[in-house]
Image (tube, rainbow, N blue to C red; front, top):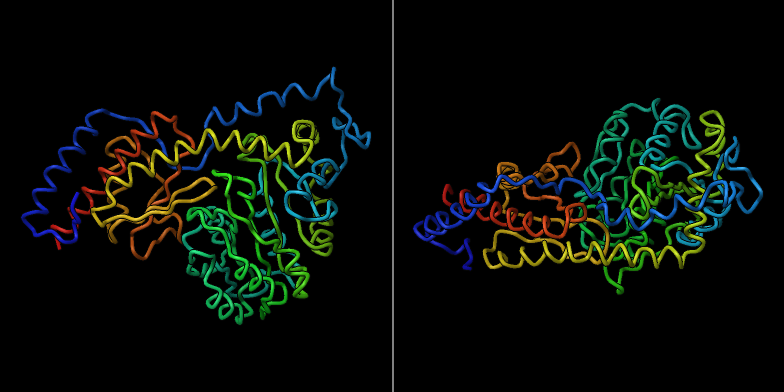
Amino acid sequence: MSNYLKMSKDELNAEFKLAKAEYEKLRALHLSLDMSRGKPGADNMDLSEKMFDLVGNDTGFKNIDGIDCRNYGGLDGLRELKNLFGEILGLAPDQIIVGGNSSLNMMFDTIAQAMTHGLGGEPWCKTEGIKFLCPAPGYDRHFAITEYFGFELVPVKLNDDGPDMDEVEELIKDEKVKGIWCVPKYANPEGITYSDEVVRRFAALKPAAKDFRIFWDNAYCIHELYEDGDNLLNIYDECVKAGNPDLPIIFASTSKISFPGAGVAVEAGSPNNVAILKSRMAFQTIGPDKLNQLRHARMFKSAADLYEHMKKHADIIRPKFESVLGELEKIKDTGVARWTNPKGGYFISLYVLPGCAKRVEQLCANAGLILTPAGAAYPYGKDPDDSNIRIAPSFPSAEDIKTAAVVLCAAVKVAALEKLIEA
């Protein structure tokens, strides 16, 4: 396949006829496919099904401390899971709060609490024109939280090794900048992992706002696709070395380990941050769903158990990623698309010809393939280049993902050729 960017108008028109015919054949199949969100497939969730047999009349309801998990109490979660996540995240167990199923819920709560009661300073709502830094492309639901609370979302360029730290260090000189969203390992959607240098520069930040926080969403901390996965430096250890222990608030969950709607989530940080968060939780709840926590604790007794479990996940998801990447390779020579090739996480970030992402989304929808809305990975849903599309290969079956990738590539070609012919 030749490079579209080097073709004459006559050659482009001829290529367009072929691409459009291919696309129309796919559209005629009346497909119904969904690659819109990074959800585990049923086969992934089946891996944790035995968990439901681990708590009950035969197995008992008490944890290792003798707590009856059917009753009230245990505000910050079971000790087994605090130990487990402490090992995974490289933190002391007493720095861990284990909650319900949603780390996003914990992030929302933390922002809400900071708005009304502050994070060691006055309530954020008392400062007019507050801002939040948003490395982009990034996670749309992060951006939506801070947009909901009225922050000005300030985009920061995301490089191959993490956010552009020159930009970050300049922007935090403004005391109205209260925080930054980060997905530091296998970032959503780019799949990159922050370099050691970037982590150390984060740890050494000296923000004008003394209550500035790094929202460190380590959602994919053990979500490797290959054995030679990426390593991420421990942000908390580096912050302690730099004299900034309160800078990061760290999040993780089992949403893509056990069950997205019935997993467990954690929030962690310095003793000071944890004390602030726990003091407010006491007014919010008498305790989390400890029966669900107990199920997880009995299934995943150690970090080694979790890592073995995640290898099974990788064996299911990896072929889906490779199927999409294999189809994309077939259009590489056209010169109108590029993409990431991550070692872990849940997404492939696709870049099409500028001005074409929304058209690709539309063409895919017309052919029965639902994608994440073009631009979703940018603050306010506005990609300045209209180029990025987040690809989520995890949910469809292996057979469907192959078909979806064919439809996607056909749409990319048609959209690019339309744009080039019009130019």
